[in-house]
Amino acid sequence: MRRRLLVALLAVLLLVTGCATVPTKGTVRSGSRQGLAPDLGGVGVEAKPPRDTFNDMDIVNGFLEAMSDSQGALDIARQYMTPEAAAAWKPESGTVVYDQRPDALARRAGGIQLTARKIATINQRGEWIPAPANAPADFFFKLTKVNGQYRVASAPPGAYLGSNQVDLKLAPRDLYYFTPGREMLVPDPVYLPVNLSSGQAATQLVQELLKGPTGRLGSGVITLAPPGTEVQVSVPVEFGVATVALNDAAASMRDQDRRLLAAQIVWTLNQISLRVKITVGGAPLLPDDPDILPFANFSQYDPAVPGGALTDLYGVRLGKVQRIVGLDGASDIAAQPLTSSQLYPYNAQSFAVNLHGDAGAVVTTADGDDVVAYARLDATDKSDAVKSIPVSGPVLRPSYDNQDNLWIMDKADSGAPRLRVRNRGGDVSLVKTSFRGDTPVVLRMAPDGVRALLVMKSKTTGKNYVQTGTILPGNSGKQLVLGQFRQLQLPLGGITDAAWTKQGILVVGVSTSSSNSTPGPWLVNSDGSQLQLLPGSPAGFSARSIASNPNLDTLPVIEDVEGKVHWLSRDLLWTPMDSDPKAPPIFPVYPG
Image (cartoon, rainbow, N blue to C red):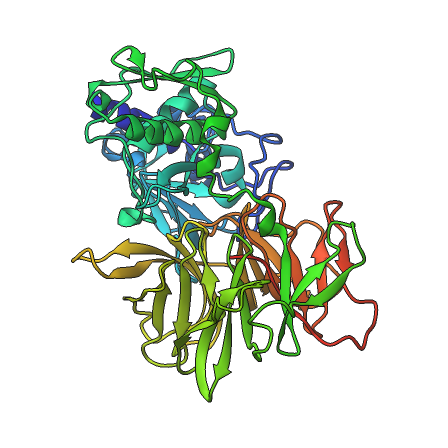
């Protein structure tokens, strides 16, 4: 029964393959996918069966168009095929997203050739996996005649989705799992159909959640669902309330584990605006809570890390740590030296602040040795001494997570860059990793301490690219590993910085598909899909670095190539910090 449900759901997911003709309105994309929210308006595709008047090109166009039917009518797509090809076709095996262009199809002897650039693959879990640069999405559609009419005699493995149909067919959703310490939820992005009813969408989200994390996060996160946990029936939705009936596999869970599993389910369904009721064997999963679980009851696990300290902006000016005030309009905009901090006397090459806003770390030199020095900010107790960690070679700006772990990357230009983590107790551990000869330029840890964001310099091309990684437990369980790397194939050049944000990732770079050569801030999903200019841009200046974090109230801040700071106000206007053109440069830093 479970396998039949899986096949049925995958069939729905994969009824979203692209057509080879360009719609006359609606969301049209060229190359990369744009826009972080699915466009549910515009042109949908209504599949039509083949007609007797169709020539060879019409048949292949119709076949691709039928695969992207808005109602998911694969039976019509199969009408374009020979009986043998229709029986052998397995669209549920995966989806290829390709760069859809008017000249993608061409006649060849015996059939039609599709020649396009592959953008990504969407696997059976709904993971968006960016394709390597210049990877082809080529396929030859062999045609034959059946009763005098052309039919497709060979179909590509899985299904094909044209780039200008993605936003009409699929929407990014997050499954939620816990950090190994169970302190915080971690989003795991997948793509699911947009044309499902609320009940169908809720059912598929819960079923995907109960399968466990995707390959992107792997063993870096945990699920509280015991093995064999399933929804007994589909998830009905009445008056905005989804009822999730779990089987008896979850009946033996401890109270705390039940609450954490409830948090996973509530957070996963909340993104489609559903309230949730959860039962196990007909009884409430949380018997001491209301039947309909309030979302606010699980806010302490928020991956966006609520808290006023995360919106405080800091910086380094002339080697001295600063606090930048005035972004909220309550005072004049200014950089105030942190003279009360024991870090202030040091000549700081870079500066990191923890997510609580009460401690920081600088890359500096002490007594002739290169170190990362860390201490409390605004400390009045001088017995709270500065502590340091020896480093060597180029050192990236350190990064904090929500557990006050301090992540340090040194020897950055060597054949074996070194990643270490200092925990809250002061112990320093080596994190095993390998970049295969590429050089790390930027390291930003997500607040969960599981996801890593890196800007890397390619040993082969000398150009910078962006990738994500996951902190995993080692085989022995003692040494952590940074792995599960996913390169984001972005049509950007001149990449200089990247940072986490509430909507995904911000990247500083130049579009390779535009004549505009000004570096700007770009917004992209954490899986590398849906690239767009940050709203409010272009900004009228050349960006060099960016400060951000996932807090919902944090304003993106840019340092331009002249060292001037600008932040994006809530009315999408860029505001400069200094009116004095002679003001010394400042490097902005948010907690994280």
